[in-house]
Length: 283
Image (cartoon, rainbow, N blue to C red; front, side, top):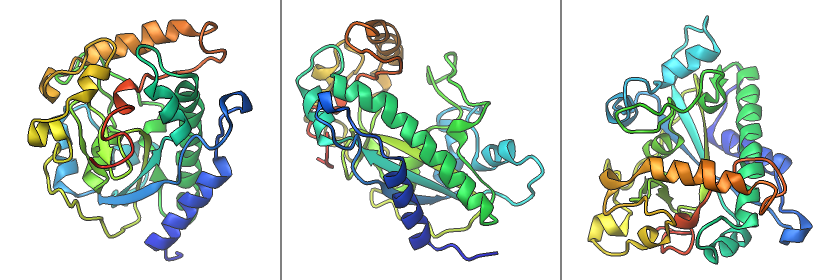
């Protein structure tokens, strides 16, 4: 079995990023939809990850459960969660700052086709690492993955990219529910679970899930509350209304197909991720 180092992992993900890279169409200015990824690693045995069944709900998959869904006969336990952050390009962020209700075409294009790219990266990386002898899966691409509406935390999925990114040391949550990373809150996240043991990154913020949010940490800011077009963001994470957010995204914005957006997809919103102090950096 070939030895796989962190450096090899990083190099492979960067190469996948470049080979799968999506660009904005010429009419929207062209250029990459994402900047180069930031890659971090968590241990599958991290107590923060183990506690997600309590924080989110028992329906949330453990790394072992996710790996067994892809490899039912595999007896090797999950060892690592490899997480990456794809920062949204300046062009899409700049365009979205100007909006006050619907996302810009640049942002919507990035959400649709950038996430397709992210999925290809997950699939390609999982296949590559599995071929090297380490069973690996992307839980977000599992046939069993889907969003549940009736959970103790509202709308949720059985694999949270944000929580695993938090566990891996990417960053902490804001009151909008997004993850504030070193590269900001405007991004897409991806992850895989693997049987390959790797050294985990240190969470410089410890176990505080809101350490980098100015509103939570210092009582200042709250700009994302004003940016939300439907008032779904409250004074803290407990008063956030995920249903209002989802209704705006999946109904009002989705209804703009053929009007504002001439392609079919998920357009996102992202107003709370742009025009805010944490848009492209840790504030």
